[in-house]
Length: 260
Figure 1 (cartoon, rainbow, N blue to C red):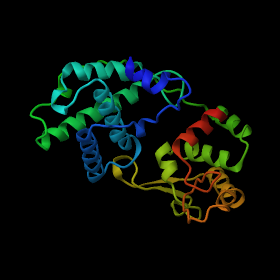
Figure 2 (figure 1 turned 90 degrees about the vertical axis):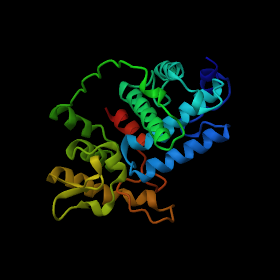
Figure 3 (figure 1 turned 180 degrees about the vertical axis):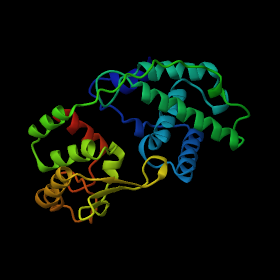
Figure 4 (figure 1 turned 45 degrees about the horizontal axis):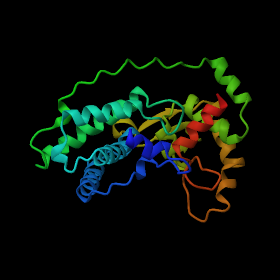
């Protein structure tokens, strides 16, 4: 497929991030910008919600390279072709293809996008409603036992590793929640962690065990400031990178996978 060759198979060319796929068609650029503003206005700002504009950028890039000159020319066959494309394209972050969960996110993004085009009178009907896709059932996640989690702590190489494990397993924080965690959200004297604007945009309070609190405190006291030395910006993030910036979710995932 020409599109796959353009993204992945041209020798000596850096793979383009899906966030930065070039859209040449000015109308498509405008639609993407307007949809992004719509998503922001609706309050989608955490977790998979931030993926919606990226998914639509990839879709617009796809149809542009397919020679579809206007959004009105998109039909059920176009959507079907796009589905087969995302079902078979390589995953940029790990080996293999996109997960079932990510495929669902792409399809839901299309549904939101075409509903938006209907509401703004850009389209009279939505081709995204026509095809029916059947996704295979998601595999059940493997849950680590207490003994396995304890063993993970023995392979940690830093205070930050132990704090990351404590936040993920000891407090049950999602990746996006760990990314957005600030210093004031961890209240040691009360033994709680406040997760702000979490799922369904609600705050929730999580109790900390003494074991978890110890590892979080050791990270703050012994290691967190090291990353801030060469960064002049004020950073209130709980987890910071080696360069003093808010630690990104992809890097957290990579570190957890390394430890496991």
